[in-house]
Length: 215
Ligand SMILES: N[C@@H](CCC(=O)N[C@@H](CS)C(=O)NCC(=O)O)C(=O)O
Image (cartoon, rainbow, N blue to C red):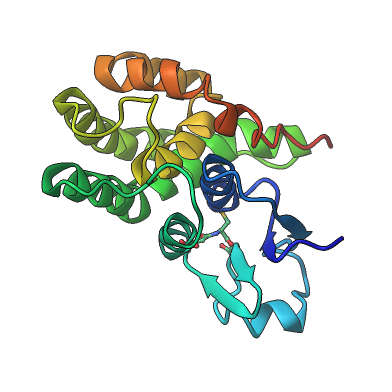
């Protein structure tokens, strides 16, 4: 029987995985519809729900929502289970700060440059641009240091009780650390590295691992 929650997204998308981590944390049953946002044609019924053509989109009954940070906040309030948005002011601000840092400064260098060019494209047999890896690594340095400062403060990112910050960060670090240069950069940030060692063992992170495509 169809479930009332449907996630339209691309299996290798980090943003898709962020939404999946939140759904798993809240123990929500959901269906998946695969949509490749870079395919030559994107279904009209997807574009009607996401006019920018990016994944994912969550539908709950007749309610549709896109933008992943909105999706995970919706999931948090709409379903029972552990609260993903902290209520105390400090942790609340830090969790939102982590999400915003990643969207504004982290996703492109860590995922689109380092991971895509060092790991994903080679898996597909596609052309790799070493300059992209180098530029991504350089830009990732500031991001990792900022996240390490937040992790060391211990208001969020304990890696055991997940918040929206963990949901957003774990899929990006999971990709970034698959590049040897990424793993090394991460290991130099002790609080962030310790967070990753803990969070990567969580069921919601392990169950949503998309693996890698084969060429
Ligand atoms: N602001 C969007 C970003 C989502 C996003 O960038 N998704 C990527 C996949 S990880 C995508 O759809 N990319 C398609 C493209 O760049 O054309 C959100 O938070 O959901």
